Amino acid sequence: MLNRALTISIVAIFFLLVIQGVWLYRLIDSEKVDYRTQTESILKDAVNKELNSRMKKISKSDGFSVVISNNAPSDISPNEEKYKDVGIKEGNNFTKVSIEAALQDAYKNILPLDIDTLSKYFAELLKADGIETNFKLTYLDSSISKTYSAESEKVFKDMLIKSSFDTSLPISMSKDLIVSAHILYPPTVFKGDLLIMLLSSLVLTIFIMVSIVLQTRMLYKQVSLAKVKENITHFLTHELRSPLQSSITNLEVAEMADSKTAPYFLGKSKEQLYFLNGLIENILDINKFEKRQAPLKKKVFNIHEAIDPHIARHNVDPKKSIVITKQIPEGGEEIYGDELHISNAIGNLIDNAIKYSDDPVEINVSTRKEGKYYYISVEDNGIGIPKEEQTKVFEKFYRGSKKEHAQKGKGFGLGLNYVMWVVRAHKGKITLVSEVGKGSTFTLSINCEHGKEDTFS
Image (tube, rainbow, N blue to C red):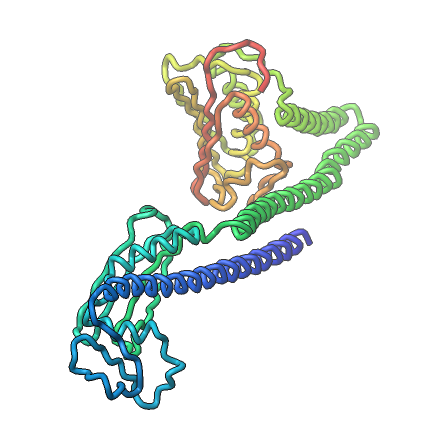
């Protein structure tokens, strides 16, 4: 149910982001269209301004006139140099021909367009409208197959995103004179209300992404919590019931048994009760470690004292053929830490190695010291742990999913979690190397820097 809710939430937020992205794209595209229309209008004004500057120069020349007509007047000879006849081709409507286009045709040979002057006027008009951008102007005269170009001064050089557009403007009636412009969209296109909307959208997008992450984490925590509750329920109703029922049964039988057989059943009951007591102690210790309330009574002790009791315990009435060896370098016997918890951690690893191994069982406990860390490794020839489960075995109440693990192990999924917390309390870590069918090696690293004798994890 929670996974379905999470999926629906992510899909809904994804579509919201898509809609927001489309809206932003259309908004930016609209701003670019407006900017392009504005600059094209300014370019026309710059062309006309440049034309006016040439007209002033030509007007100073004596006896030069321009005649715009379908047919030149009879009193004007087109061969005279002081007259320029601009004829409109038959079929064209005079009202559709601008005076500026006609004048461009008239002046192109006498005094052609000056691209540098046009570039200067274009830059001035852009600046007057509050636009600062880079551009390149190109002037093409197809009648003589010549091209002239001029670039603006560098207004901004290093932009992460250089977006631009091209536009062209025929400026003569015959359309053989063309002014082209390559114009860069400036950063100032994102200003005013658009800038506010973009920043608001960015903040909203970040908020949505953070919400997705937090919601995902919260839902997964809820899923994990639900699984933990389920495991605890299973733990209390099934796992604890078995040793309690066994103890009750043994006590009832002992009551009815004779003096010779009664101690046997009482011993079995005592064994089960010790098991339950150890389990409760483990749970309490883990809870203390998790709340950072577990006091560590650190001292220097001999590592043999933490290992030998477990070897002796498994040599008494073993149900399997067990061989436990030690590899402790001479001079490397002393370790600084909490003897009780370190010994319990080693005992848990040895118990697991025996539990999840076939007969015969071979276990090797080795140590080494490197710098401030003391390393304790427990290697076995057991059934191994699948790679996909190796990161989960240290979780509380986790049990292996393989049938072979379920058959061999009757624990509660607390042992390795306890070992992990003991190592963390000593500012170290635990590593696992395992291969199915070949065994496992658990390595504990204990920080042996001397500090206070009684410290909290």
